[in-house]
Amino acid sequence: MKSNPLWQTARVAALRDLTPTVREFLLQPLDGAAIAWPPGAHLQVRVPVAGREQTRSYSLVGQPADTPGAYRIAVKRLDQGRGGSLAMWSLAEGDTLSVSAPQNHFPLEIDAPTSLLVAGGIGITPMVSMAQALARRGRAVRLLYAARNADELAYAQRLRDTLGDGLVLAVSGQGERLDLAGEIAALPAGAPCYVCGPTGLLGAARALWAQAGRPASGLRFETFGSGGQRPTQAFAVAVPRHGASLTVSAGESLLDALEAAGIEVMSDCKRGECGLCAMDVLSVEGEIDHRDVFLSEHEKQGNQRICACVSRVVGRITLDSAWRPETEALAR
Ligand code: FES
Image (cartoon, rainbow, N blue to C red; front, side):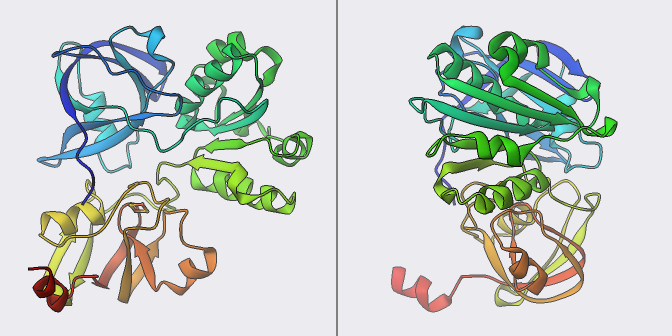
């Protein structure tokens, strides 16, 4: 239910461990050069997870001129995740995989005189190209970058070289905190702020942005559907309108499982941001682990809808779909 990107086969040309849990991949398309990408863009890759080929998205790191003809991404290994990162980490140099053309849902306003970038953990990846592009244009830019441990600050030296004192680091495991409120207060009116990281970071940035009286349109964000409170595990789903009962394995999303069962669900971002995949909940036995940033906290507590692309369930859920037989008949 989503536009079909152009796919190429690419070879893993080089691997490099940036931190104990972040590995960088240089991907060289076999049938031509990489397609140039704008700051903030990402690449989709297809990897085998639990016996099925699945799609994952990773931000492109740096600018096209840094890696002529090739793409660079970085993948954080998530041992409790849905399996995509482990599949990527199992690749060796010389292996091949399918990659899409670059796509961009996180565009940079390159002409803004001043910008604030905020990254948490692996959310640093799109910020590298953004920081480089802004710095090269002579724009004022500050990048706030938090990680749990000092050895998980990927690209810190490279960003220091690009931004100098404009890079502010915080290691939460050492009790350090970013002064988000102060940084937002210091921004000139109309300056944009870009946030990429876990949903908790985005939630904090959103609240402070609103408290500061800034327009919502000035806060741009990208998440990676990582707001879950629990390890990823299998759960049961029933969709009575389709007479379907299925199990969502730990390695797939609810959206993927429904589509594999022939139940079409509208979707777009697949990161819990746009809300297009939100489905009505008829009942739940157990708990919904909401991992999106689209539904409000009030809606999440009400458990009346679930974003199928990222959110999960501990237990069993019964859902309704938007499919109506009369609509299908009219479309014929
Ligand atoms: S597809 Fe965008 S929130 Fe699920």
